[in-house]
Amino acid sequence: MMATAARELPAGPEWSYEVKWDGYRAQIVKNDSRVMLASRNLKDITRQFHAIARAAEAIDARSAVIDGEIVALDADGRPSFQALHHRATDGLALVFYAFDLLHLNGRELLRTPLDDRRAPLGQLVGEAPLLRSATLPGAAADITRAVRQLGLEGVVAKRRRSLYEPGRRSDAWIKVRFARHQELVVGGYKPSPNGFDSIVVGYYDGRRLLSAGKVRCGFSPRNRAELFERLKPLASARCPFANLPTSTRSHWGEGITAGEMSQLVWLRPTVVVEVAFTEWTRDGSLRHAAFIGVRDDKPPRDVRREALG
Image 1 (cartoon, rainbow, N blue to C red):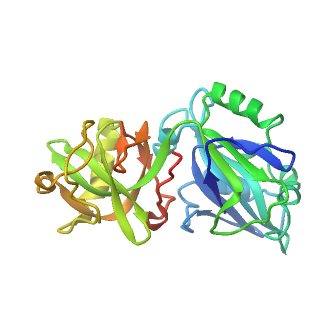
Image 2: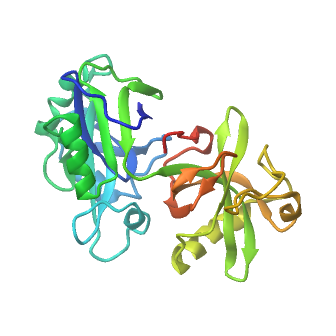
């Protein structure tokens, strides 16, 4: 179940609020002594996050499916998606924030209201690296102010009586991001002596992949080299974007003209990245886009434009 983007949190007693954690969505699946971690696109990521899987073996339940987020905490205890992408970094702590319970001891809970699903979580998790994503007390405006001051990514509001809708982006869950981020599919790059000068990214509108422009900023020598190694085998003779070339370049340099097309290397669109930006332009490109990290947990076909950023 996924949340719908909005500019402001809904208010009222029927809503609960929690931090929007900046990490990898995952589920713990426990069956007797066997534990698996599954990503949002149902990949087995148990080996990738073996410390969390080992800790989940001690969960006091015969069987359980726990929905949550794998988060990397930096040396100051703050969530860092870039740190998660480079989890070999010294001093990094990986934790699993549990926010929903979908199955417990043979009982499926998908048709059980959210508050009742969450109630047993406190008995199943609570010690690092398995933590409960606590509900935030107070009114929506106060929560917004406090979470902004802490510099966290955002807040998710959930209807307390909502049922779990697998695979759906539901308006029973509302997410408000305080920084503009967008998941995008990489469909090309402009070569340079260091691998690439910029990447060309886009999102799906139905079956069409639409370009959202180029991303040039946010790359360190390390993540640039790592991303280039992923992209090189995906080279393709065909441009995957349905809306290229654009007729002109804007005042801010967005857009890709026919003359620029021959300078680009096109790719099979299989790699998803997360990008920060200031705004969408009128022609559907990103302004001041900066690379944050690769999203291995997101299927390319699920990437849609979040108009509210």
